[in-house]
Length: 537
Ligand code: PEP
Ligand code: MG
Image (cartoon, rainbow, N blue to C red; front, side, top):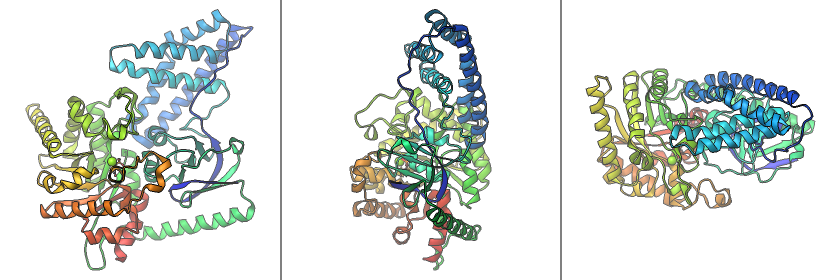
């Protein structure tokens, strides 16, 4: 059997198919003869869940850093809460019912109470209580799998994965993933590429009877061969060997200049989503970080990261990159990147709604906390700040006024910072590209976000797999906007880069160089291929 979809993260890998279903549905209620035995079963489940959470914390600490790992220690604390366990025990005792049902009732009850509270922090606990109860229910139901820990190499199949779930995937165990839904430029696909996990999206409904079977995933072709015969397996083993040889050859480009045959130098930077991804950027010889998607510090957390926590993350990235530049993009939340504790309103059209800079300008304190953390970290390396989703020059004026406030506060608090930090904006809306002549007078650089620029120019929601055949990132309208932006940037003597996924499209490299693009920022696995391409032009 062959599963076909859109290959969104290249390379070939092998593993056992594992269906991942994160929804707990239809918990059965049944009577038990011996409630005290059932309570023992409950405590066994809680104990196992605590073990899992300890392991997850340790793994996450290594992979995604302390801030993102903390969610697991908060969940463990919840399982230690006596009010919670007494409530579950009480239901088992008085109603003489199974532990799973008692947990589900307790979870509903506690999360409702949290949701009714005035305090935003407490309201955000509602989803944690659900997560942690579901974990114990899964264990009691004999299903110990969760998105972050597997005992053997697996290829995950899910209806869809959120960016938060994807960032938690354990790269040593997850050989690839396939989602029934999803699109090429969703953040889930982007994360798969930057984490180096082969992935296929938009595969349509997949028959669950293949669960547990051995399979080959080809993330380039967008195919997964389930239960392959010996000949097919050896063809793919050969292919994988060749891929590895290619990667080995590419490593020879490490340490070489990114320069065209006629001597034009291009800045070749990496896109990252967490401090842990700096390792991949350095291993692939990135000349800087062209896009640090800072929202991943907020995603997968159960509460707003504090100024101190953010400062530590930015400092870690800057220190690890040494003298190389790091461009931190401020919080780009909203659309597909939802966070419970932000309490974002439900919207008909979230990609065109309350997101990114709009939230930051509206919730100024939140924005200032992030800016303070970045400026405080600015002494530890070469940082620049970039703002997402700009559509008007007034937004840039407002951002600059807030930066002035933050700097003045730091001065009066006696906190040192680098006053020369460069300020740039993303050009990812048609409006910003069209007025790039005006915007170029206000900032130090532009970085073109082709993912959103494509979605907004072609009126194609990047999350909607139904319209993927209408999405043409090479559309002349997009290329004209890019060229117009480059020309306007250069008229004002500022540099301009591309950090959207199109930057890694080798069929476009020559065209981008012709336009005069100064910088390309791509996921770590694409850096050396792109350097090879540029050196051949
Ligand atoms: C883009 O829109 O091209 C971009 C780089 O930002 P993101 O993919 O995070 O929206
Ligand atoms: Mg964008």
